[in-house]
Length: 497
Image 1 (tube, helix red, strand yellow):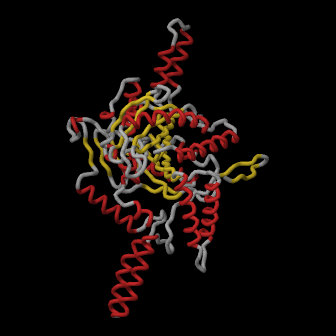
Image 2: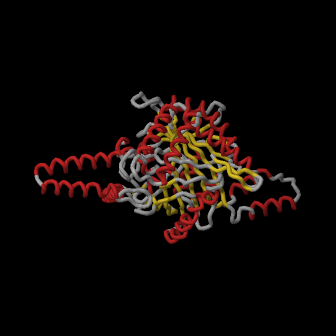
């Protein structure tokens, strides 16, 4: 955090985000550097036998290294791009891009279960320590349990900058406290903007109007309920926390009842601390509310019907879409068409606390917009090792004769991160997904142009999640999907690359 003078007031800026890198030569990571060293040794040994053998070994090494060296502006190598394309072709040939449910589908008992990563998920309802019901999502493949909070965010309009800075400080403390939550593996914040149809306001007014009230007052209330929502937007803020059933790798998984008791005891503390971050009153969502939110995400046209139904429950088996079809660059689901982007680079340098305002605000060219920040905290022991290793890796890159200015800045940032961690700061991995949903394919160019316009002021680089639109769409929902745990590439290989 840095303070800069703005007139007579000191305005705080924020930054020093570090993207994890592995030690290596140039753009090569640890794995690429190892392949290069092994290839050079092979060429040297081949030259002792035959010149032609050395030439052939050099050509083979060049062919192998070229996909690892060539990168696009988002830092993605040609090998990663080719792997994604091959995986897409393989999945499409086997029909994995299609989903059909209901009476004519292939899901169990004609239900409308969620597709893809959430197909095997279960939803149960338990009670926290205050006796409040909360929904708990279980994903059997990873052994993760997720609780979701609905927040009544205050917003920054007509709020003093000092109060906003205080909220940001408390939000940083809340994220740092996640490192001390036993068994917590991830958290996410989802800000969704959608058109306000006015059904909730009309229902609230209708339930509280006194039948003996004057006719003029009743007419005024009716007119307000009918005209006030016109052209307005509904902004929803949801926070999801995900716990692992196994306290540590290799340990025995706890049962659903044990996880319900543990999460129920932690919800009051988490929601109470959220109130100091500007999130307003935070409360756990029950099963019916969460199922409705997911149903509307996949079927935007169902919003009017579900708001009219009021408190009628929707089971988890009915929360999914009837039909979806994934394309290379978009995702078609029931009455909506969506495109999801992922953050490829965090803002460089320092930013103000309002840097994300435009990106999360409603936009007239996007029917529904969802901005999700994904967090995975490190425990304090691992954080200390990581920042020290990052310092060594950053210094390794400036050990040569020629040092780029960016590498020198990276060393200073790594040193600052190490000092802050030593003083008690937390270390959190984070990512961001942005989903834009429209009613038809013809509206996609306007929505895409809107996101391309909103990203630069937010100081983030976004890239469309080509070939994985369905998974990215589900991960942007507050469902507790931890994407790295669903990848088939070993974690050790991912870190080395």
